[in-house]
Image (cartoon, rainbow, N blue to C red; front, side):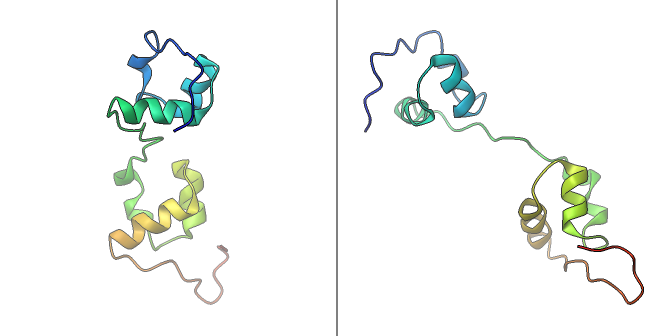
Length: 102
């Protein structure tokens, strides 16, 4: 385990798990790895990141390319792909004469 250079975590412990480790690391002036190990020591889970409100986009899955949905939802194409696969929805396939592209 890396050394955390005598950091006084007291003012920062309440932030652990409420924001990404990289954001806490900037506030503390340490590495994200040091924040990770502090969270692990205190048994605090990681920040979940940006959450997609999938019910707003589920009806589009399989009807347009995942890349388009990703742009609308503010997430990555692999994120859309994983969600679509979990729901058992086939990917969009371009029909002949269709102007939409991947």
